[in-house]
Amino acid sequence: MTANGLSSEQIELQARAFELARGPVAARAAEVDRTEQYPWDNVELLKDARLIGMTIPTRYGGQGKSWLDAVLVIEALSSACAVTGRIAVETNMGAISAVMAYGSEEQKKMAADMVLAGDKPAICITEPDAGSDANAMTTRADKRGNRYVVNGRKHWITGGGVSRLHLIFAKVYDEQGNHEGIGGFLAIRDETQGLKITKREPTMGLRGIPEAVIDFEEMELPPSALVMPPRGLKKGFADLMTAYNSQRVGAATVALGIAQGAYDLALDWSEKRHQFGRPINEFQGLQWKLADMSIKLSAAQSLVYKAAESGRDGFPDMLLAAQAKIFTSENAIQVVNDALQFFGARGYSRELPLERMARDVRMFTIGGGTAEVLRTVVAGALLKKKLPQTRDGWA
Ligand SMILES: Cc1cc2nc3c(=O)[nH]c(=O)nc-3n(C[C@H](O)[C@H](O)[C@H](O)COP(=O)(O)OP(=O)(O)OC[C@H]3O[C@@H](n4cnc5c(N)ncnc54)[C@H](O)[C@@H]3O)c2cc1C
Image 1 (tube, rainbow, N blue to C red):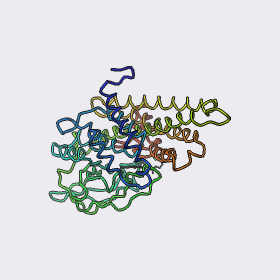
Image 2 (image 1 turned 60 degrees about the vertical axis):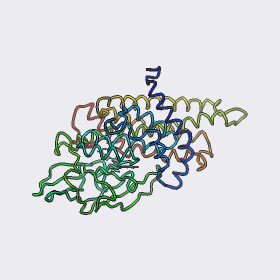
Image 3 (image 1 turned 120 degrees about the horizontal axis):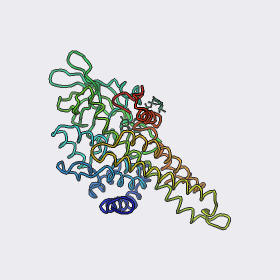
Image 4 (image 1 turned 180 degrees about the vertical axis):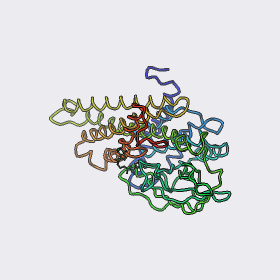
């Protein structure tokens, strides 16, 4: 263990990720944003460097790495390209981790093989009329004979149109039409009739990953597609959502990485840029800004690492993951905004990465549980009460 609490393997892993981030990933980040094309080249780079599917257990071909290991990689990649950081999140956390924890042997093998081959799974929860209140979802899976028939609409699904493996949440009904709970089903795009990508959202930032509307029209799935958590269907959604705490830590990490990247640029520029005959970092107004930015980054990093570590024997703790995501996402917006200010007019130009970072970082108080709803999660945990907004299964 070294002075900063990381092992020598973790420092080596981090260094490997930074090498990619500062080299080929940084070189393509602006183009990925401008062209709005999913960076398949970066997926290949990550695959070659063994940075995707790291958390998958070794018996399924992964490396059995910890959440903190994944966080170190995501943080480094996101400092150069948030889209690439998100690919690292979703190939190590979220849907893949839910399948690895609760899936059947067959599902685990299939999902692991797909991710290790470069697929970023999609997780389909949100609907036009069921956002923060995910339990209000209307997508349904009706048991008919030896299959389920799924109908409904999801929106804002990250990776819709590029992802192959989908983890789809739907209300499950038996043959008599009785509601049995919310279940998660695995479906593969292009191999499943009735799974249709119907719209790409025009997003503010993170433009290299599509956000899509997905329609399910009489989509037929075998019962073996159902990812069945140990507590069964009734409580299953809550179990499956514990896996989502890893994704929340991942999302916080991308925000942290973006802010760290912006801060580094501002620090560097503050020495290079001269006004009034001296570097601009000789003005106390900017010195204090730098101090505040560094404090926010250190605090956010501590929260993120602590939340990741809490999942040493399972998934990250819900309270710690929520605290980390709220604090990091809100402070990262401020840090990036302050960093942009250091550049004056140049910061507002599309020739520098600051404006892209400001657009990219804005998402993290929204996606994966809004900052408001997550505050309710934190309050519920502190008060040990099930608040109306924290019903089983979601936030
Ligand atoms: C870039 C991006 C990627 C995403 N990726 C995915 C994905 O891959 N899969 C997926 O399923 N979803 C995804 N989402 C959807 C995301 O999880 C939802 O946007 C989020 O849960 C909020 O839902 P909503 O947008 O419907 O907002 P609403 O729920 O309509 O909320 C609107 C406002 O009301 C506030 N609010 C709502 N309820 C409460 C409450 N109880 N207390 C206080 N305030 C409240 C919210 O905080 C917000 O400010 C993504 C979203 C974005 C932006």
